[in-house]
Image (cartoon, rainbow, N blue to C red; front, side):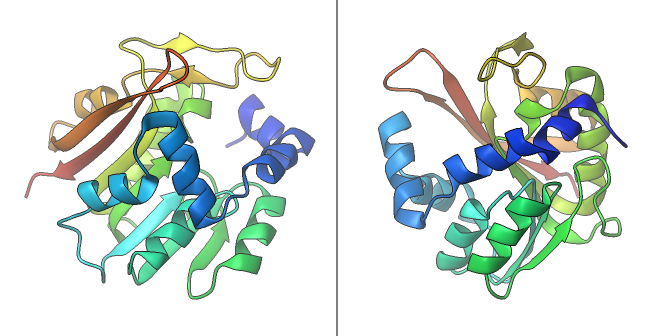
Length: 212
């Protein structure tokens, strides 16, 4: 599947994003503290407290591997990532070891159904056009045996935001709520609104689980 957003992120615009956002673990924690007053390590620990360290975990849209690097440092052993941008994959492969990385998108995850105990996104769903979101949700749901985890910009209704002078590249909405409406066997395990300290934006971290 090809979209205008995939075309933009696959090119120079996406490469510039990767260069701006290549973060070491300490930088990632520092950025989250500046944004919310809480480190990413702290948030991960709270949300993933019941997830065994041996669980198979897939990140959809891993970019240069910031989140996977932190999860590996936290002791998670079976990590996987997919990314549409070849340049970002090169960056991720140069820094991550013992993590399987493949090219792919949220619309075509290159793994069989129920391959992972947990599938997650971090700042990825916001860049998918609202009319295409259900396709990405369906793929993420298909590949998850149990948990879906996310950290995304939040708004109570779908709101488009101009992104670095570009239109149709960023939307915020209630992503957890949309998942729950689309799949009636999902339940909300926990969620937390994360207001920014220096501007009026809000993020939401959420953990969903398939009912057994």
